[in-house]
Amino acid sequence: MSGDKSRLLERMARLNRIGIALSAERDTRRLLQTILEGAMDLVGADAGTIYTLEGDRLNFEVMGNRSLGIDVWSEAARPTTFEPIALHDAEGRPVESLVVTSAVHRRRTINIPDVYHAPEGYDFSGTHRFDEQSGYQTRSLLAIPMLNHENDIIGVLQLINATNEQGQVVAFAPELQQLAESLASQAAVALTNRRLIDELNALFDSFVRLIATAIDEKSPYTGGHCRRVPELTMMLAEAAARSDHPALKDFHMDEADRHELSVAAWLHDCGKITTPEWVMDKATKLQTIHDRIHEVELRYELLQRDAEIERLRARLVEAGVDPGPEGALPEQAAVLKEELEFLRKANIGGEFMDEGDQQRVQEIARRTIRVNGEERPLLDEDEVKNLCIPKGTLTPEEREVINNHIVATIKMLESLPFPKHLARVPEYAGGHHERMDGRGYPRGLTREQMSIPARVMAIADIFEALTARDRPYKPGKKLSECLQIMGRMKLDQHIDPDLFDVFVREKVYLEYARQFLEPEQIDEVDEAAIPGYTP
Image (cartoon, rainbow, N blue to C red; front, side, top):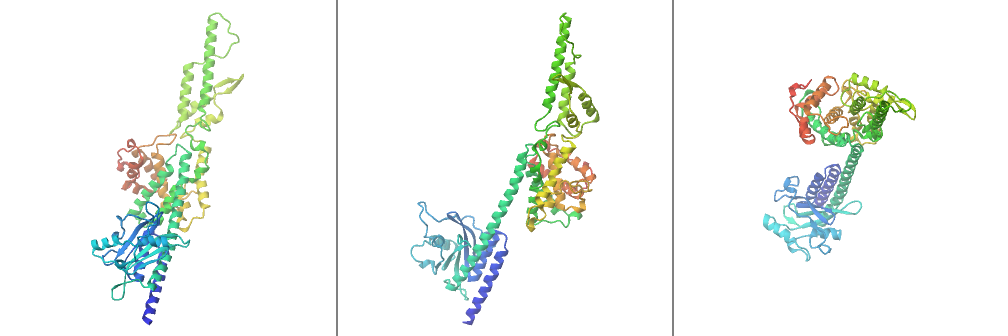
């Protein structure tokens, strides 16, 4: 009796240890394997399987069979050829001829001492075929429905061939059945919790991508940016983790680190949700809610009409007809046409507008037009200021509005109660406009004050912007030109020098290009000619 008590106490202690292991396991697949191995050990079963309930069917998840050498942790334990088992037939009637489906329908454990002398109503033909094909001999069987804390069945734990201390196959004794049921109950709760966590994580990740998609959809000119930056960020981060560069030797990433960086990359521009569309989409210098170049064109049309009127007045004078009060001297149509074409080109914006062109805008602005009998300047001060923007299409004030998106990003992310494993998301996402020399924004951080993932994202954000084909003010650049620009940025202490070298050496730029760039952008790159690059 004392030996029985000792065995029972040992099994109870083992049950507790299994319960602790179940609560600590984070991976669903490993959790199922832990459940099955623990159950087989606990009751001395030679084999077992776990099914999970999905809709109206039971899915075969994991199996183990010690006599056949199938370890629950091996690939062989993951059946891929077994079809799901339906709980109802084609007419909608419950299938109770199978032990596992019967356990679900009856919501109780089915204990079969000998499947070759089983009660009528059960179909063990599949078991018999398995025995014939494998040489195995199935005898005792225990099928336990797994009920979670809400009393919902989420699967079935099936154990096969209980063995005694002499190794003989015996029936599952009542006390062993109770232990197995207790474990199945704990396992169901652990599995439900794991599923809930996985579902919440999936919902969170989907919501993060939803925000990024909304920002991309907000502007037709940056569509895809929030989706491409995470891809490039992870490419470079993985390359950095593999690198043997001395400055990166301590940088490693596990799955949690990867997820944290991925979330940060997806949210790096979430502050753009506060940026006015007309600033984000400012494709030309005169654009606000609409492109004001059309207003300028209308004014030139008035000037040309005035010139035509003066020409006709002159012809009347030549014909000896009094044209009435004299007007201003006629303007030459060709001059007006050329000026308008110049302003159209100036309005487009680009990489650089020289001082001569800016001065010509000022000179054109001195021209006047007559509206309602009043002389008005052809271009107002704001139009002159915008047309003289030396680079791109944004004024300093508009650039400040754009730059403020990163401040908004930081504020938004720092206001969220991120769990411990995502605590660095605000820091990673908020640093992609900083510079290594401390002259970036918004915080003016130096290289030493930034984490490696934040520096990785800064490079990803710049390279994506340089190669993007959907910007309103420039076409996507070719690879060689982008790397030349970034090489100069390295020398200018704008981007991390070691990470840029990894970016080039590991050909991260080429991996990204093959996935996201047009063929005409992927030209030959002479890495030796890249400024500042150290092979």
